[in-house]
Length: 132
Ligand code: MN
Image (tube, rainbow, N blue to C red; front, top):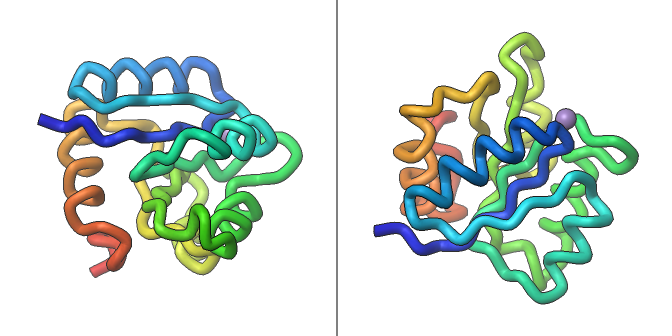
């Protein structure tokens, strides 16, 4: 069973609730943040294995937050998976360029999500399975 901890950074409250519900029900310890400052505050004493990162955030966006976290030795090992919008082609390449380890496309396939998360967790920060 799961048990790893995951931070979801997502400004859409409905999406945040959906992720929290889906991942909690699979046994993950899930915390949520709705913007970059809240995420950084949480990360002071919460050390997740993975961050699900919405790219479009108010203020500091997901690309910038990813760059900051990957540049900081305290957070650089966290697997960061971008949440990209299906309609926004090009987001995936930009997300990987910013340092994300992979991406999941929204709208979320709720049945496929847990397997994707488990796959990313087991592959670690070595690289993005979706891009191989
Ligand atoms: Mn957003």
